[in-house]
Length: 322
Image (cartoon, rainbow, N blue to C red; front, side, top):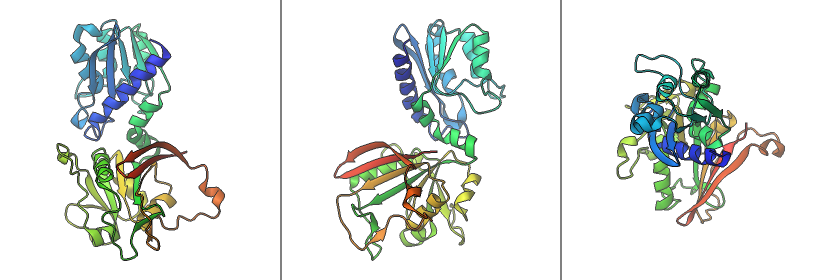
């Protein structure tokens, strides 16, 4: 395969992996595609609870056609033994593909290069490429491995002049139905969703997924407050306490104060901004003080990843540059 072809199939595997997010927790959701003579003969993603792994599912589908084929996988095949089944590296050795293209090495010290080496030792060609799409699809897993906390997406819905509500507090609805549906789709990709105490007390948000067929994908509710915990809601007292959550992906739907606290603590990895074509004037600002001492400190922090139109509203996604 060519480098261009490798990237194309890894991108497809990364998209496929979204099917397992976030149900694969505590494992990462991995995508795997097996190509034989230019045709897809097997594909898989990590299933609920972490098993079967993507490679196992793809190999089962491919059967004998995996022999001599090319395997594309977003994360290095695991090499450590488990009571839940054989390692993916051993499964691949037994299947005998001609090559394996890996989108990202596994930071887990139990694998960390060992999976690739085991394949090479069996005479399988291994290519580890720099795949931004693979890394993006593994953001929750990689963030927890590197920083000991979930990947955090901060969502803000605002007017053209940066307001999230009228001065009276009225905020429903700033954006239209298309944008709100997009928010629900993002919720379905998160292990947990967080709001601040003020938002909870004033709005009593449902924080669920209300898209047909995805209702069961509603994330667990987390509340940032020092008050008494409501039933069925996990409470943390500071943004830093997100490290205590059993989650790889945290979606924050915050008011100005909570948004500022996460930004000031530098815990936001992705910004999702929904901007409605309205001007409020004198309303509630979207973000409170984040402690910047000068404008120079605000530059060079965020990179635009995506911009799209959702009905009359504009959606922009930004990644934190670290």
